[in-house]
Image (cartoon, rainbow, N blue to C red):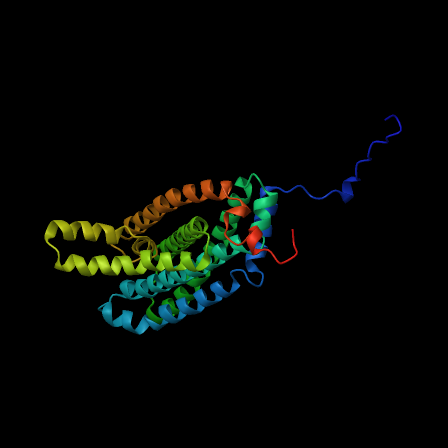
Length: 289
Protein backbone atom coordinates (compact mmCIF):
# COMPACT_ATOMS: atom_id res chain seq x y z
CA UNK A 1 0.00 0.00 0.00
CA UNK A 2 2.90 2.36 0.68
CA UNK A 3 4.05 2.01 -2.96
CA UNK A 4 0.90 3.66 -4.27
CA UNK A 5 1.52 7.11 -5.71
CA UNK A 6 -1.32 9.62 -5.51
CA UNK A 7 -2.58 10.97 -8.81
CA UNK A 8 -1.29 14.38 -9.76
CA UNK A 9 -4.06 16.89 -10.40
CA UNK A 10 -4.34 18.15 -13.95
CA UNK A 11 -2.94 21.61 -14.65
CA UNK A 12 -5.52 24.36 -14.58
CA UNK A 13 -5.32 24.91 -18.36
CA UNK A 14 -6.12 21.24 -19.03
CA UNK A 15 -9.06 20.94 -16.67
CA UNK A 16 -12.52 20.97 -18.27
CA UNK A 17 -14.53 24.11 -17.72
CA UNK A 18 -17.08 23.86 -14.92
CA UNK A 19 -20.54 22.98 -16.19
CA UNK A 20 -22.39 26.06 -15.01
CA UNK A 21 -26.03 26.67 -15.85
CA UNK A 22 -25.00 29.30 -18.41
CA UNK A 23 -22.76 26.83 -20.25
CA UNK A 24 -25.48 24.19 -20.26
CA UNK A 25 -28.01 26.69 -21.64
CA UNK A 26 -25.61 27.66 -24.42
CA UNK A 27 -25.03 24.00 -25.25
CA UNK A 28 -28.79 23.38 -25.39
CA UNK A 29 -29.31 26.38 -27.69
CA UNK A 30 -26.59 25.06 -30.00
CA UNK A 31 -28.15 21.60 -29.96
CA UNK A 32 -31.58 22.99 -30.84
CA UNK A 33 -30.10 24.91 -33.76
CA UNK A 34 -28.24 21.95 -35.20
CA UNK A 35 -29.67 19.76 -37.94
CA UNK A 36 -32.51 17.73 -36.50
CA UNK A 37 -33.28 20.41 -33.93
CA UNK A 38 -35.69 23.31 -34.24
CA UNK A 39 -34.23 24.94 -37.35
CA UNK A 40 -36.94 23.51 -39.61
CA UNK A 41 -39.73 24.46 -37.24
CA UNK A 42 -38.34 27.99 -36.87
CA UNK A 43 -38.09 28.41 -40.64
CA UNK A 44 -41.64 27.14 -41.28
CA UNK A 45 -42.98 29.27 -38.44
CA UNK A 46 -41.29 32.38 -39.83
CA UNK A 47 -42.50 31.74 -43.37
CA UNK A 48 -46.07 30.96 -42.34
CA UNK A 49 -46.29 33.98 -40.04
CA UNK A 50 -45.05 36.35 -42.74
CA UNK A 51 -47.44 34.93 -45.31
CA UNK A 52 -50.42 35.23 -42.96
CA UNK A 53 -49.44 38.56 -41.40
CA UNK A 54 -48.43 40.39 -44.55
CA UNK A 55 -51.20 38.78 -46.57
CA UNK A 56 -53.78 40.14 -44.16
CA UNK A 57 -52.74 43.79 -44.57
CA UNK A 58 -55.20 44.59 -47.42
CA UNK A 59 -58.05 42.80 -45.65
CA UNK A 60 -57.22 44.46 -42.32
CA UNK A 61 -57.31 47.85 -44.00
CA UNK A 62 -60.86 47.26 -45.21
CA UNK A 63 -62.07 45.70 -41.97
CA UNK A 64 -60.50 48.50 -39.92
CA UNK A 65 -62.97 50.98 -41.33
CA UNK A 66 -60.29 53.57 -41.93
CA UNK A 67 -58.81 53.27 -38.43
CA UNK A 68 -55.03 52.98 -38.97
CA UNK A 69 -54.44 51.51 -35.51
CA UNK A 70 -56.93 48.68 -36.03
CA UNK A 71 -55.52 48.06 -39.49
CA UNK A 72 -52.02 47.77 -38.05
CA UNK A 73 -52.90 45.59 -35.06
CA UNK A 74 -54.57 42.80 -37.06
CA UNK A 75 -51.50 41.74 -39.13
CA UNK A 76 -49.34 41.79 -35.99
CA UNK A 77 -51.81 39.62 -34.10
CA UNK A 78 -52.26 37.12 -36.94
CA UNK A 79 -48.53 36.84 -37.61
CA UNK A 80 -47.67 36.34 -33.93
CA UNK A 81 -50.40 33.77 -33.36
CA UNK A 82 -49.43 31.84 -36.50
CA UNK A 83 -45.76 31.84 -35.57
CA UNK A 84 -46.51 30.59 -32.05
CA UNK A 85 -48.95 27.85 -33.09
CA UNK A 86 -46.66 26.47 -35.81
CA UNK A 87 -43.69 26.51 -33.45
CA UNK A 88 -45.73 24.68 -30.82
CA UNK A 89 -46.09 21.69 -33.16
CA UNK A 90 -42.39 21.77 -33.97
CA UNK A 91 -41.42 21.85 -30.29
CA UNK A 92 -43.73 18.95 -29.48
CA UNK A 93 -42.20 16.82 -32.23
CA UNK A 94 -38.65 17.81 -31.29
CA UNK A 95 -38.94 17.34 -27.53
CA UNK A 96 -40.98 14.15 -27.84
CA UNK A 97 -38.52 12.70 -30.33
CA UNK A 98 -35.45 13.80 -28.39
CA UNK A 99 -36.68 12.04 -25.27
CA UNK A 100 -36.92 8.73 -27.09
CA UNK A 101 -33.89 9.07 -29.34
CA UNK A 102 -30.91 11.41 -29.55
CA UNK A 103 -29.27 11.96 -26.19
CA UNK A 104 -32.49 11.28 -24.27
CA UNK A 105 -31.79 7.65 -23.32
CA UNK A 106 -28.19 8.49 -22.36
CA UNK A 107 -29.45 11.32 -20.17
CA UNK A 108 -31.63 8.91 -18.23
CA UNK A 109 -28.65 6.70 -17.51
CA UNK A 110 -25.94 9.30 -16.84
CA UNK A 111 -27.85 12.16 -15.18
CA UNK A 112 -29.68 11.05 -12.02
CA UNK A 113 -30.38 14.64 -10.92
CA UNK A 114 -31.93 16.34 -13.93
CA UNK A 115 -33.13 19.59 -12.37
CA UNK A 116 -30.35 21.73 -13.87
CA UNK A 117 -30.73 20.03 -17.26
CA UNK A 118 -34.49 20.63 -17.28
CA UNK A 119 -33.96 24.27 -16.29
CA UNK A 120 -31.33 24.76 -18.98
CA UNK A 121 -33.52 23.27 -21.69
CA UNK A 122 -36.47 25.43 -20.65
CA UNK A 123 -34.30 28.57 -20.66
CA UNK A 124 -32.81 27.67 -24.04
CA UNK A 125 -36.25 27.09 -25.53
CA UNK A 126 -37.52 30.33 -24.01
CA UNK A 127 -34.59 32.31 -25.42
CA UNK A 128 -35.01 30.89 -28.92
CA UNK A 129 -38.78 31.39 -28.92
CA UNK A 130 -38.65 34.95 -27.60
CA UNK A 131 -36.02 35.91 -30.17
CA UNK A 132 -37.96 34.26 -32.97
CA UNK A 133 -41.22 35.97 -32.01
CA UNK A 134 -39.43 39.31 -31.76
CA UNK A 135 -38.10 38.90 -35.30
CA UNK A 136 -41.59 38.06 -36.59
CA UNK A 137 -43.14 41.13 -34.95
CA UNK A 138 -40.34 43.41 -36.13
CA UNK A 139 -40.61 42.29 -39.77
CA UNK A 140 -44.40 42.52 -39.90
CA UNK A 141 -44.40 45.84 -38.05
CA UNK A 142 -41.89 47.27 -40.53
CA UNK A 143 -44.05 46.42 -43.54
CA UNK A 144 -47.33 47.25 -41.81
CA UNK A 145 -46.02 50.60 -40.60
CA UNK A 146 -45.09 51.55 -44.13
CA UNK A 147 -48.43 50.32 -45.51
CA UNK A 148 -50.81 51.81 -42.94
CA UNK A 149 -48.78 54.14 -40.77
CA UNK A 150 -50.88 53.15 -37.78
CA UNK A 151 -48.23 51.53 -35.59
CA UNK A 152 -47.40 53.54 -32.50
CA UNK A 153 -44.54 52.96 -30.09
CA UNK A 154 -46.88 51.68 -27.40
CA UNK A 155 -48.51 49.23 -29.83
CA UNK A 156 -45.11 47.93 -30.96
CA UNK A 157 -43.90 47.46 -27.38
CA UNK A 158 -47.13 45.67 -26.46
CA UNK A 159 -46.90 43.48 -29.56
CA UNK A 160 -43.31 42.52 -28.69
CA UNK A 161 -44.23 41.82 -25.07
CA UNK A 162 -47.25 39.71 -25.96
CA UNK A 163 -45.57 37.81 -28.78
CA UNK A 164 -42.40 37.01 -26.83
CA UNK A 165 -44.19 36.10 -23.60
CA UNK A 166 -47.16 34.33 -25.16
CA UNK A 167 -45.05 32.45 -27.67
CA UNK A 168 -42.55 31.37 -25.04
CA UNK A 169 -45.24 30.10 -22.69
CA UNK A 170 -46.98 28.27 -25.53
CA UNK A 171 -43.80 26.41 -26.52
CA UNK A 172 -42.97 25.60 -22.90
CA UNK A 173 -46.46 24.15 -22.56
CA UNK A 174 -45.93 22.09 -25.71
CA UNK A 175 -42.62 20.81 -24.33
CA UNK A 176 -44.30 19.80 -21.07
CA UNK A 177 -46.98 17.86 -22.96
CA UNK A 178 -44.28 16.13 -25.03
CA UNK A 179 -42.40 15.12 -21.88
CA UNK A 180 -45.56 13.82 -20.23
CA UNK A 181 -46.59 11.73 -23.25
CA UNK A 182 -43.02 10.79 -24.21
CA UNK A 183 -43.91 10.43 -27.88
CA UNK A 184 -43.63 13.07 -30.61
CA UNK A 185 -46.67 12.11 -32.68
CA UNK A 186 -48.88 11.58 -29.63
CA UNK A 187 -47.84 14.99 -28.29
CA UNK A 188 -48.56 16.76 -31.58
CA UNK A 189 -51.94 15.08 -31.98
CA UNK A 190 -52.88 15.83 -28.36
CA UNK A 191 -51.99 19.49 -28.78
CA UNK A 192 -53.97 19.66 -32.02
CA UNK A 193 -57.02 18.13 -30.37
CA UNK A 194 -56.70 20.32 -27.26
CA UNK A 195 -55.82 23.58 -28.98
CA UNK A 196 -57.90 23.35 -32.18
CA UNK A 197 -60.53 20.60 -32.18
CA UNK A 198 -61.73 21.18 -28.61
CA UNK A 199 -62.42 24.94 -28.83
CA UNK A 200 -64.07 24.63 -32.25
CA UNK A 201 -66.27 21.74 -31.12
CA UNK A 202 -67.27 23.34 -27.83
CA UNK A 203 -67.97 26.69 -29.50
CA UNK A 204 -70.22 24.99 -32.08
CA UNK A 205 -72.12 23.09 -29.41
CA UNK A 206 -72.48 26.20 -27.25
CA UNK A 207 -74.47 27.90 -30.00
CA UNK A 208 -77.16 25.23 -29.72
CA UNK A 209 -77.04 24.86 -25.92
CA UNK A 210 -79.18 26.75 -23.38
CA UNK A 211 -77.67 29.83 -21.76
CA UNK A 212 -76.19 28.23 -18.60
CA UNK A 213 -74.49 25.49 -20.61
CA UNK A 214 -73.41 27.96 -23.27
CA UNK A 215 -71.75 30.10 -20.59
CA UNK A 216 -69.73 27.14 -19.39
CA UNK A 217 -68.82 26.32 -22.97
CA UNK A 218 -67.66 29.86 -23.63
CA UNK A 219 -65.48 29.71 -20.52
CA UNK A 220 -63.92 26.42 -21.63
CA UNK A 221 -63.14 27.88 -25.05
CA UNK A 222 -61.69 31.08 -23.59
CA UNK A 223 -59.35 29.17 -21.28
CA UNK A 224 -57.91 26.79 -23.88
CA UNK A 225 -54.23 27.51 -24.57
CA UNK A 226 -54.83 28.44 -28.21
CA UNK A 227 -57.37 31.13 -27.31
CA UNK A 228 -55.10 32.41 -24.54
CA UNK A 229 -52.17 32.53 -26.95
CA UNK A 230 -54.25 34.49 -29.46
CA UNK A 231 -55.26 36.95 -26.74
CA UNK A 232 -51.67 37.30 -25.51
CA UNK A 233 -50.34 38.08 -28.99
CA UNK A 234 -53.07 40.55 -29.99
CA UNK A 235 -52.04 44.19 -29.37
CA UNK A 236 -55.44 45.39 -30.59
CA UNK A 237 -57.58 43.88 -27.82
CA UNK A 238 -59.98 45.94 -25.69
CA UNK A 239 -58.42 47.12 -23.47
CA UNK A 240 -55.17 46.07 -25.14
CA UNK A 241 -52.85 45.77 -22.13
CA UNK A 242 -55.42 43.97 -19.98
CA UNK A 243 -56.22 41.53 -22.76
CA UNK A 244 -52.55 40.70 -23.38
CA UNK A 245 -51.84 40.25 -19.68
CA UNK A 246 -54.88 37.99 -19.29
CA UNK A 247 -53.60 35.78 -22.08
CA UNK A 248 -50.11 35.66 -20.60
CA UNK A 249 -51.46 34.91 -17.13
CA UNK A 250 -53.71 32.11 -18.35
CA UNK A 251 -50.89 30.48 -20.31
CA UNK A 252 -48.63 30.86 -17.29
CA UNK A 253 -51.06 28.88 -15.14
CA UNK A 254 -51.22 26.05 -17.69
CA UNK A 255 -47.43 25.99 -17.92
CA UNK A 256 -47.03 25.91 -14.14
CA UNK A 257 -49.40 22.95 -13.73
CA UNK A 258 -48.17 20.81 -16.61
CA UNK A 259 -44.49 21.66 -16.12
CA UNK A 260 -44.67 20.53 -12.50
CA UNK A 261 -46.05 17.18 -13.62
CA UNK A 262 -43.52 16.88 -16.44
CA UNK A 263 -40.63 17.71 -14.12
CA UNK A 264 -41.71 15.13 -11.57
CA UNK A 265 -42.20 12.45 -14.22
CA UNK A 266 -38.99 13.14 -16.14
CA UNK A 267 -36.98 13.21 -12.93
CA UNK A 268 -38.05 9.65 -12.09
CA UNK A 269 -38.14 8.25 -15.62
CA UNK A 270 -35.68 5.49 -16.47
CA UNK A 271 -34.62 4.04 -19.79
CA UNK A 272 -36.24 0.69 -19.00
CA UNK A 273 -39.76 2.17 -18.82
CA UNK A 274 -40.03 2.24 -22.61
CA UNK A 275 -41.20 -0.85 -24.39
CA UNK A 276 -38.57 -1.96 -26.85
CA UNK A 277 -35.65 0.01 -25.32
CA UNK A 278 -34.67 -2.96 -23.22
CA UNK A 279 -35.31 -6.21 -25.05
CA UNK A 280 -36.92 -9.03 -23.17
CA UNK A 281 -35.18 -12.44 -23.39
CA UNK A 282 -37.66 -13.76 -25.97
CA UNK A 283 -36.97 -10.80 -28.29
CA UNK A 284 -33.19 -11.02 -28.27
CA UNK A 285 -31.25 -12.27 -31.26
CA UNK A 286 -30.70 -16.01 -31.42
CA UNK A 287 -27.57 -17.08 -29.62
CA UNK A 288 -27.36 -13.93 -27.43
CA UNK A 289 -27.48 -14.29 -23.66
